[in-house]
Image (tube, rainbow, N blue to C red):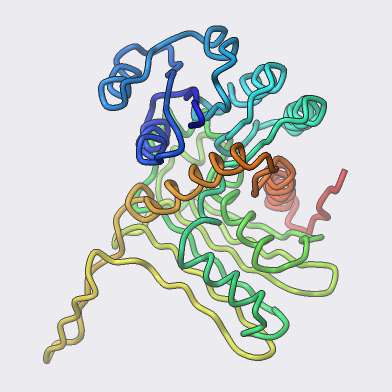
Length: 331
């Protein structure tokens, strides 16, 4: 039984708490959150205890920590957890500043502890099937990847102010999927964006609608398109085109019911939000983290995957300002 401490009792923290409770190989022992009401809801559902950070990290029974707190606390908690010898699961991004990301990764490397980054889409059954089919050679040599990711509605202004912007907060998931599906590291990025939906994005110096093109050294291409508003639901699609064919992962819908009539063909809209769309992926990534602790192996995706996606986000941000392809830093 792997005992875990959860940092952050908000929306994502609650999801992870449920995933831990459902895993027969794990037990949630502690919840750490400065908001008693939020922490108490998880405690009532799981039987965990509310403690402070020092208590959680000092307990030798704790085999790992799950960091789902505010973004600006991720690196700080991860560094402290590494120093305490705890395995680390950290929600994305590790930090909004690359120097803090690098400091965190250095602390993790010194401690030699397992580190898993929260790129849950890698664990989605449909997306994983795409990667497995690529590995099996179903499409031959990958040439084009198209990723569509559109939220049903914008986040609150309070959240947007601390999110780090669309590229670091939203597109970062797509950057990770692009790396996984292309099979090569992108070496150049072109990004452009607009404010078409909510003026708050312009006030914050951000975009609500973006397009990104990634190019690898061998010439493989990926197109990513994001919007913070899709009136029909949470739009999540992937297409991989290669020399021997094409793979496509479509949206998930509540049912497969389809009505055909004189006016057209009607089916269900996509699942409305990420909590529904990726429920299975969230559970699978925590099971993988627990298994990596039990088996004494480094989890995947790891710390370097978090850093690589952040490098792409930074390059996209620079490109959106310059209007040019930007090289991706590798150091």
